[in-house]
Image (cartoon, rainbow, N blue to C red; front, side, top):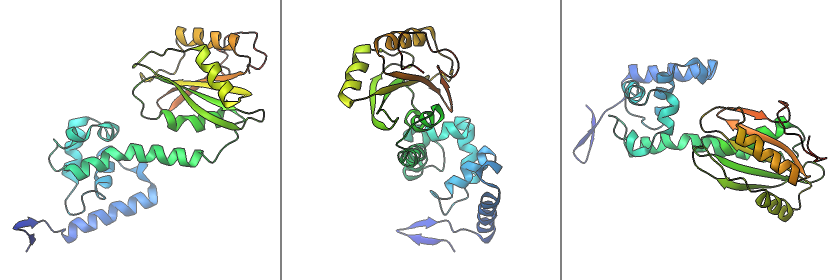
Length: 241
């Protein structure tokens, strides 16, 4: 008989359902989460938020409503709650996962204080732009040994536009005592190639700031270095590289 509390019946997990969860956990342990289809990954994740129900139909309902695993995790909590089987606690859990992932990456990469290569710089900055729906401009202030002094957010614009102020960059660099700076921004539309405005803004910054080191663009999981791709505008800035 199902357990009762305050007059409400609680569904108990059947041995068959328990065995299914055990098999899926074993599969993930052996082959990784990548071995699962998106609805299976949702079903697995929901094990931790909904311990006493079959999460398979809930996962299918989420996929039908939102279309993808990523869309589910990026959905607002109140919209998640419109899907049968998802209550406030499960909605909050799902909505928190991208933020937990972002915090983990920032914590791990925060231990890397020396940023000598473009790859190291991109790896450090990527978590800061993860999931951003608006275009943002960041500046890394570096000392003369490429060690990070400070990360400064210079602008948080609209979905596709930034106001780049050379004076703002110069002031922030001077305040941090930087010997070199790195500028980076994201493209929420997912297109990693630089726009005409990107190149014009970079040229203006390079001409005005002899300490401009590099310019990076992030779009989703991809990133582009203007210097490494040969798109860094020519300037008389001796430290551009």
